[in-house]
Length: 215
Image (cartoon, rainbow, N blue to C red; front, side):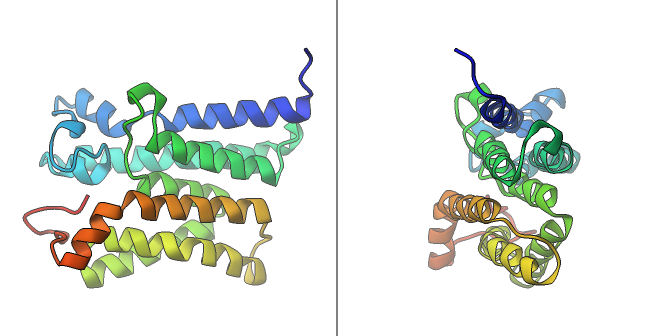
């Protein structure tokens, strides 16, 4: 059966983005640097914040950067080079979600992934650099004043779709498919932070720089 190219190329791009997103750099970097598996201590979350619990700041920073890059790379590639292959805004939305979902449920690591903050940030930078910058600034401002990493992540997740929508009025062209992708990704981020929300409400969430780091 012949599959039309207009369906084949978006499908291949989406699968490839998911596979890239499925590379859990928290685990990979920890193994490379001789550290314990981040799924075996702390919050058991394979993300940069939990890697920081190992006491190795370099490993945590490298994990953060690589998790961001794996979200940015497939989206950037489709945005800037996908048109020749018939990959439009709908494909950008699919690839963005696939990279993020790959991090949350990675096929290479028994579907035990992280919460997706860094990867989501990378996706947003891939969609539009100013969108990523605005969201990052939101994280930094909330984190600076509240000292809660999780609250900063939740605030950024809530504001990201609004920034994309407002950017349509002021700076860039917004697409409904991409807007929906940012809404779904943001909703998943909030859902993945349920335990942090409960701790924040009980006043039990640890602060940045405290004895325990927020997951």
